[in-house]
Image: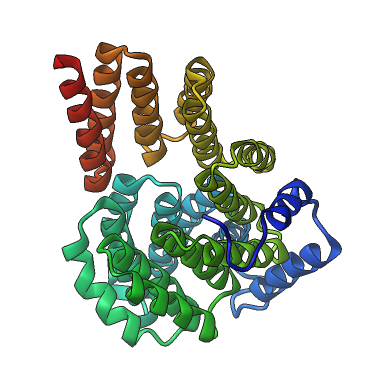
Length: 377
């Protein structure tokens, strides 16, 4: 498909120039500004508690997508708050741990952490945030009906614009999973018009790119990914910038411009390696291997997907492990090794069960069934 508003030359120029993102003075200022806002919170006096210091450090790490660091600080905040008998802060720390685990793709762990929360001493706003994260986990696990009612209520009830923006982004995900593309677009555009958190606005642009990509509206998808890229970059959010750049790479891949796609994926991989984002690295390697397979380079595809499989050891039971096993299975299908393909898809089914993702399990079952059919022909 040719772009209606962007030529191939313009796209190629972008692919060759955006590259690795250095931290600009503007990005540094944006990051400093966000940290200043955190420092201005009511609990940030010089004599505030050690537990609160851990909690604020966790929030700063979360702001820049340093998930492992954030998880460590929130765990320390929870433990210290229990020692200090600050039950409310201990519960808020648990809620944030659940959010981090969700963002790492560890949905079962996130669900278990959020179930540990006892909300009796939480404010109504904290309770709503807790309910929102529980519903987000249910969406990720494929339990759409369970998530529908709480998300539907919270998207109207939440007064905090940051939390409301976050819920609306997740609501759009639910609409997209249900095939309601128009609803997802309207919801994400609403996020852009309310005074939501800058990161949620960037996520909304990213979500719009995903919706338009699925609809085959590649020129609109490109514009949305480009806006997301600029927003994440202004926040010094390299992980988000890399995700948007990967979206642009997928557009090249969809158009059949595979060399440009590979070049963008390689640049994105370097960014993610610098950020130590294992999940993102696996996703990019998966895409690179898929391109090589479509070019008939099966051995190269297998080598890249094996590299991705090795990286998944850093991801506990994240969904990327399911995807890489299925990609390896497709590589071996292309090679005609049906026994190995079936074995890999069977492992993917088991992993999907472990993380509690019905969507991933259904996809893995489909690949497994196709391999079985091909084997008997």
